[in-house]
Image (cartoon, rainbow, N blue to C red; front, side):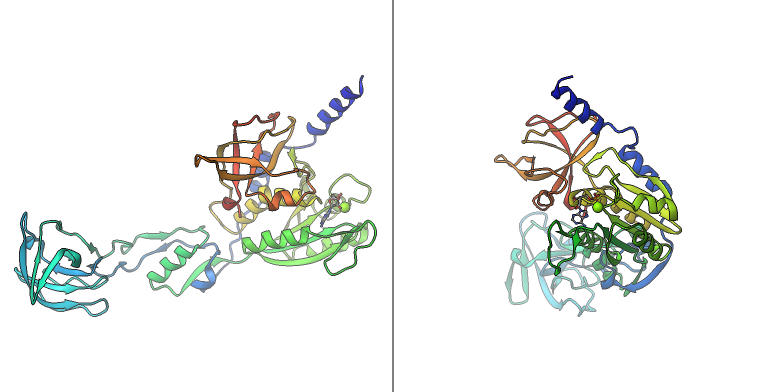
Length: 422
Ligand code: AMP
Ligand code: MG
């Protein structure tokens, strides 16, 4: 065997791992195991931004409540519209937004009307003010307006009984605006998930501490803080736990049953000082501990009493990739969200990508328009699992399937835009 052969053999072994399960299988197992929480709370609509709706919301009123004008102009009866030439109507009053008129229009009459004002009885059309000639109380206009123009019908936005927002939606600014337009001050949402996390590793120092020889700053607690905050979780940062069997056991016991989810990073490889899987086996159940993916193969999922457990790898990029691919969909499902998976789309890749078969890869990419305006993707720089900058520079994951063995320029690749993820 030449050195090349040895390397090749080793690299094949490295990428095909019989103990690993496929990412799809890992997701399926997670989704089969966890269930959505049932506790809900009623909160003011402003506080509900980003929260998950716990019930369907149907409209009890018409929005708008009455037929009103979409323009500043003149309310008329469409029978007074000329089929050609012009017509002149007599101005007999006005209707302003919030100050409706009780005039009943008769044939040959019109009233001045402002945007949002209720149409008076006897009118069904508004002629824009730009299209009329005014001479005293005589309003003259042509044939360019059609019956019903510039009128918003009652219930046009929402009618009584309409399903307005569906249970399981994550409330957006538009949604809380809609709730306000229905006159609802409060809304029922699922409670926030209680999520705790800690980092493991003797080499880790927290920001503010001195960096002695061989030490590194703990960044995983910060990326986890960011990702969990965006998800709207109620988070508890348990700090750094040393690579020590007893300390690890204590930390696990402290979290067990107290949180919906416990997330750790590091200590899940097969190194001497990797106690996470061992402690999970002792205190709870391990469902799986290796996924055929890159980065992030040593990913552990299990349960500690009522607390679900995710043991993420230690490398900073692996933490983010495994969080977005598995933890986030799981937390979304637990919080009662309908839509849990990131969107995926096919885009031409303008970089050559290296890959060996055997694992699904989540390379970091930048989606952008090329000179012709076509959306393409290119990779960020170095793709090592410790290079957090590759995540910072990226705006998408390029997802390469298990058997893929590299991508040529202009080949189509699957892309998950971060916008659809976070
Ligand atoms: P481990 O899985 O514990 O062997 O960690 C894998 C690599 O990730 C090692 O190089 C660690 O130093 C690094 N690492 C682990 N935890 C963190 C952390 N919280 N922040 C930054 N790097 C980490
Ligand atoms: Mg470690």
